[in-house]
Length: 256
Image (cartoon, rainbow, N blue to C red; front, side, top):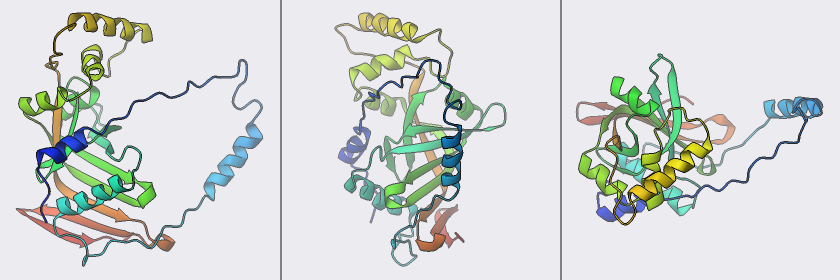
């Protein structure tokens, strides 16, 4: 089995979209969260300490898993699509902060093949500046409904301008405008500033295609290590690690 590299597969993944329309949280005037609910909060903490979850009988064995981690990931990701999970392509990206601290955030996977995992962002954002300084990075996929987790470690490199252009022009026009509006991770005075900037760029590109900002594009995380985790009863979980040695992957089982 080989990892699919067809254009349709890539477009299918890149086309996973979600609009965010959460209900605003309305605070009760004059009500401090601890003032009238301290007892409830203490009880909730006690409940959290004893919260349990028993995992199913699914598992991960050397006999049934591919010796190629990319192929195993493709199978698992296909399972998330079949299960219709919410945001199946959401992944935690970990970088080394400019201050030496670990930095983590959630980004969206927009393509993968045997070369690596692709996501898009503002190159001048916090993660962009961190990756420019130190390309080492890690990804984490967690699918609790399936009791599965995948860790991927490697280095992040920029994709080609052509690849960034192709994805940018596949995005909804509103998202293209937002790429110009947002100087990601930089301070802004208020929400109104962003809304005014949106109007400004909508006028600028009225009646014509939105060009990709020069500071916006993709990264490909090129892996040298994978770890697949599958939840098992009694916390005796399955963990298989793949480590790249030369051009071959060494597969080994880890203790839970």
